[in-house]
Length: 204
Image 1 (cartoon, rainbow, N blue to C red):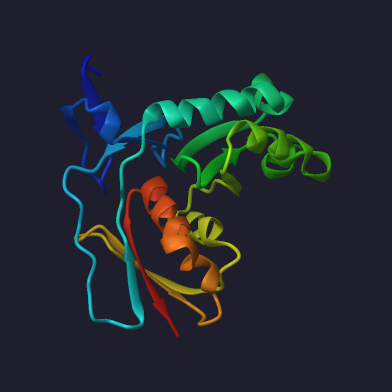
Image 2 (cartoon, rainbow, N blue to C red):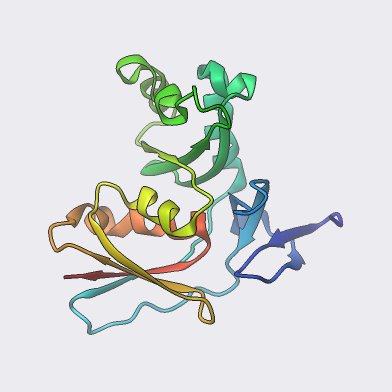
């Protein structure tokens, strides 16, 4: 890849864009599983006046914030340090919440459990080093539908409809799935960053 460029993977397109570190978000290519970087050039406007519709669009985060989270998990989780557990992607709003996506090619290794640690000891150690951050550890899936569901747990997802042309996904959840709208919808925003799709939430 040329120096000074970022590789994006929106839908089936691949493009090179000028590097702007303050507007990058680290994620991964779903098919190869290799790290990739995504850039939001112009934020999409939130639809107003629809009481049952909430929107979250991909936003920027600093790569150095993601690097710090990755470093801490490498330091405190032996399975990550050894490569038995791979960190597929990270999205963070510093001082508020981080989402870490993990995977293991070894069926005998639980990637989420490894990162959480006995009685939550490992993830608590990481959280102490990131004041104010709540940390969600999510299992990666090469199925976009399953991955979106994993990211939105514990919300009860009833249906996901993908609009490839618009690169949007409409997620229908039960009305009691209030966790996605708390704290200004931060979990939905971080999920959008990690899948690089505009996730639209509809409550039934």
